[in-house]
Length: 317
Ligand code: TXA
Ligand code: MG
Image 1: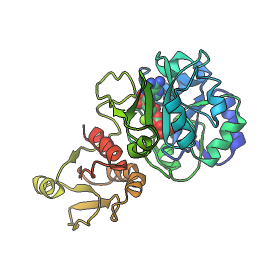
Image 2: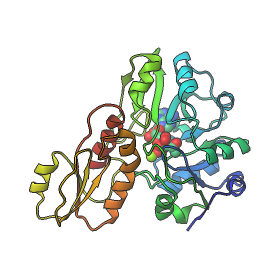
Image 3: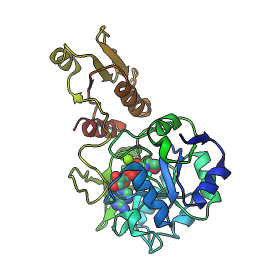
Image 4: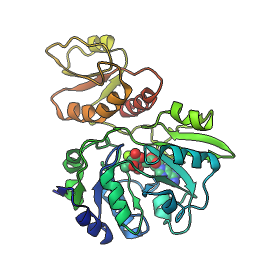
């Protein structure tokens, strides 16, 4: 198992040696390595069992640093960066040659993010290189939102987990880029579309659902628990699966619990942020519990409800 702690200098030393460290961010925990070191980056793919066609996001601490490895930033994307960084926003930007092709899976753009977490920002400031980091989970499984989640699944494959507590957003970053002057959302995430549109006007959404994604590794089936998961009207589903032990994920008004079920309410008061924080933990808890299947209902299609529904659909796919 990995060492879990808050020692930035130890994390720094391991990263400088080309090894892996799990880092806390406000979205989910990342599995980090020196983005300029191909051998170190290759270790990420190996530890996660991740196909190399799925590119990695590069994390740093300032716009000045971003300019060291990207060619230029479209004015509208710059506005987004200035408004929302540090925060749950990843920008796809034209890369310079110092970013290895392995990081971007051969694409011309690199995903860049300044995360909002004091420990990780301090670590990034002390390093001379940016950190490539995907979510710190085995490929295709639910993203980790605390240090224990990381240790449970990847503890044997990494040296150190920097423990920054539970993630304050709980959903991966929203991925945004620009094509022919148009601002495009490639992955719904912890920054709501409504907030982005306030800054740059109407955007288009291009969620990739193929099995060989061109942009965000938005595989149709992803974020998936091992137990079967079904989406729909809970009352109907509950009746349909009456012979099973049920895990139920709801939002808003309470559901009456029966003996054959475990109910997890994402947010009794219908608060989207609270729901986002709870989503991945609840999926993990139910996956590790005695239930046979997981039933869930979709949230209203607005604000973070959009990203939460996206994750539920992929989990059920
Ligand atoms: O919130 C987050 O974004 C977290 C934290 C750790 O920063 N990271 C994360 O990474 O969710 P990952 O690898 O699990 O998901 C990142 C997605 C992938 O689906 C990948 O395909 C896409 O971003 N992506 C990364 N670089 C890209 C690029 N150059 N072009 C298109 N898509 C890219
Ligand atoms: Mg991921």
